[in-house]
Image (cartoon, rainbow, N blue to C red):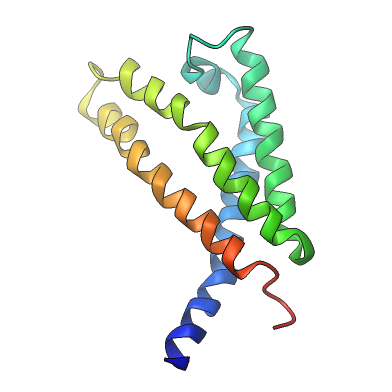
Length: 135
């Protein structure tokens, strides 16, 4: 199935660009508009929610940078998968907080939960293809 293998490889650069863009934009948003992120930090965590907001934003930007550079792309994919898993409790907190909200907000909050699994899968795809250039 050489054609099938080739098509998977062709998707890896697009996945890398998508995940890099998503993480970079999210990281910038954490710094520019931290309040919505502060609200979904699980309340069981010690310390200020703002600290977690800034730390996760910085982690998103750093991970985006790792994926953007071919020589660190595999590490970036691992970091992205770990990051997507680490922020999952915030998505759960959002779903809990918005369970009585408008149908639109509920759809957003509950839709984020399975989306996190898709993002982890995309990050793992990046790790499998690692350094895309030079193959």
